[in-house]
Length: 535
Image (cartoon, rainbow, N blue to C red; front, side, top):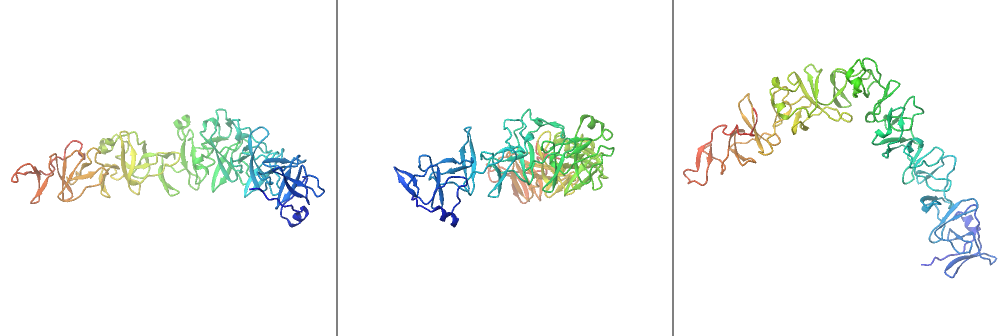
């Protein structure tokens, strides 16, 4: 479809405000558009052909080249090095983006404003431009900036291994400036540098985080004497001299900077009783007076203070709706924890140290430390992210031999604590361990030594109830239940049957007079291998 050009008087169009005139560029008006040999030209009022000039039509500007023909799909520059772009119809692009080749052969994005000129920056400082609510920056030639940018507006060499150190700003792949925004930096090289404030090589990090404020500036410490602490979304974070958030404990003039997981923690003292700032978590090494071994090995632990700045010690304490255990010097404990009956700390041990059979031994003979003298609890195994108390009836725990399930009441104390068989919500527990049937059998027996009763449980530890009920397990044996209790387990081809209230071994291949082979005995088969779980 041919474009229908209509001559428009330049002065009239300007007064009407229909379109903007290219500034500092040659323009023509009061002439007439003509099509010559398939190309559009512009004939001036005096009859001459317009060249190297802008002409208007239908509220748009078009450029005539040095041969007088309409120019398409190209950049047009004026005497002041202002850049314009004309599209495939030859119309000057306004208020729009275009990706164009640069002088070095790469591609870059340019933005052409309301007057058609490409937005440009300065060579001595960053010049921000707001477009559709986002902030962008361009170099002096109009190319949109991306990546790390220095304070003077110069792009940081992307091949550098510490681009973040030289940079003040960051622009995403879309060119938008990072403002009030975190940047996750994963391209950490072997020679990325060293942080004096964090006292670590950056190469030790798998990833690093930077934050850019409302003005787009990188948040960073002024020097290496103290970290920069910044409140972000209600939490405080510490940044080093290069703007990297300090993700782990770092010593600064005998103070401790918070880790990323609890970034509002800033300082912890090194005095004898471990006093730190009030209502804070601190990840720190105990001083030598508190624990010489941890001090010499530089073993870090979490400490929590009350509102007066004193460390919680030798107790279980609720913090922000979750409960945590602290030992005698205030170190947060994880995994299995035994607390004395008076509520003070007794012992901690990892879940992988003992196997399931260790929890089924009478406490007096148990190898598990302190289990006969105190209350057993379970806390999160992830020390850095969640060391809080676990409660519930079906908590998976990986012991030394296998994955099992434990139960802990709302108080946190193990169900069946201190070596007691306890029924809780139709399931049985001993020292917290849920008594589940073996997978390859499907059902199992729990003997209550107090009553002498045998109880049938399934693979989920739930009691199987019923009266005159006959089940078949995964080994093909028949289990008879009477009045909610185990009665017998037999290995026979036919399902046992009841006659006159009595359970019989049954053989359907015999004649009718002999099919009820014999009465089953009370607790017959109770001691079958693998079937009896606990007594």
